[in-house]
Length: 252
Image (cartoon, rainbow, N blue to C red; front, side):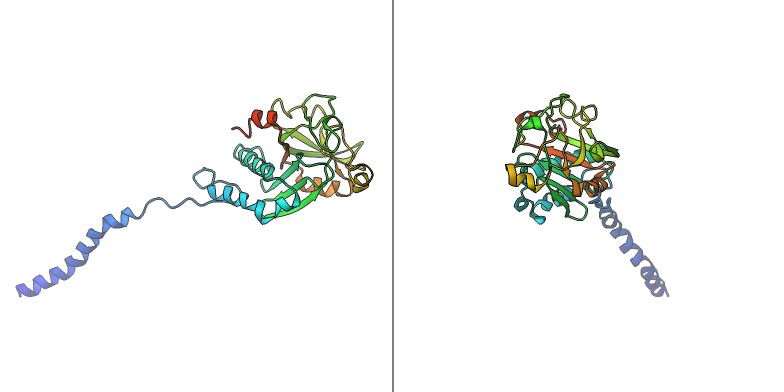
C-alpha cells in the first residue's frame, strides 16, 4: 500500500517540478516585443526614427531611376535628410509627398520632381523656373532679400491657394531662418507661367525666368498645386556652399 501511495505522489509531483524548473526559461524569453516600424511615419512604436524607413527612402532613388531622369543623388539625399527631420519635428502634414527642385541643373531640363514616397512613384517631372536675378540658363545666385528677384534655396512647406495675377497659385512658407524665411513677404509662390515651356528652350536655349518664384508650366499648374498644397515638403537645392553650411535643417 505504501508503494501505491508513493507512485501516486510521484505522478502528481513530477509534472509540477518540471513546470517549476522551466519557469526561468519562460520568463527569460518573454522580453519586450521588437518595435513595429511604420513606413508612413518613419517612427517605431517607441518613438525612435526607424532605420528601416530611412533605408527604404534611399532605395527609392534607384527604384525610380532618378539619376537617369536627371535628379542628382546629392540633391535627393539632402532632400530626404531634411524631410525626415521636418516630419520628426511635426512641420509636415502631408508626409507621403516630397517635391524637389534641382537647381544644379539648367532650366532647359525637367528639374522638378514630385515623389510619392509611400507608393514609390513619380507623380510629376517637369520644368520649373528660377528668378531673373539668379542667372540665365543656370541658377547661380540666391537671396532672401526683397526685390532681389532671386530664388531662395532650402526647405518650404506648401500652404493654401488663391487666384492672383498669375492665376491659380499656391503660397509657400520658408522654414529656414535667414535663407528663405521671407518667402511670404516677398510673395514667393508657386504659379503657372507661359514662359515655362519648350518653345523658349528652342528659341533661346532655356526657359523664361520669374521674379523668384518656382513657376511651372501652365498646363500642369493646377494638377501640381492640387497634389502638393496644404502641408507637403518642397526642397529647392543647389550645390551652394553657403546654403549647405548654414542650413540648420541639414546640419541638425
